Length: 170
Image (tube, rainbow, N blue to C red; front, side, top):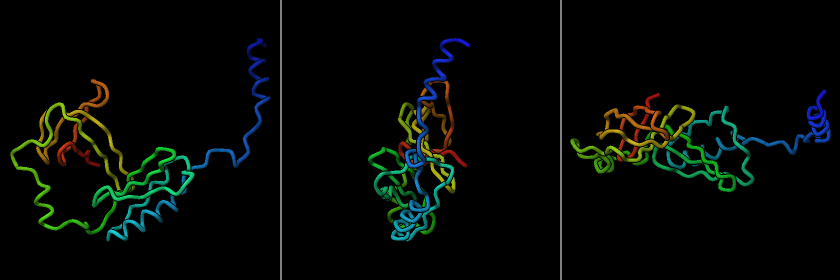
């Protein structure tokens, strides 16, 4: 056996095993579901349960839950820096015709221009993922446009949902 191999074995033998309490704990999704459920209920909506496959370090304090818009909640752990988006279902709190008419852009004007930074979302029933991209062409609401990711080689296409926003269909 080589000297380096023996030295490595000796070093591994000196490292004590971590007790179960010192291992990294993951977030309790039942507690998060209860929090998001209360906030969504107060808004007249229903929060979608968090996907149990997501593993995040347990927040040392209670995670904060805030409404991003009428369809999404944000769960944040400020001390660890993680954020999770939770979709809501049910009647929209601001779905009045007057509010909807102000949000609609002019039919012929592009809301995304070539070179604009675009927030691309992928929404499923159990989670939401957001991705930053750059538009490679102009686009109106409802049109599918090409976008460029972090490097010049990664491209994707998404449907424009508003100024600086696009969505990839599930």
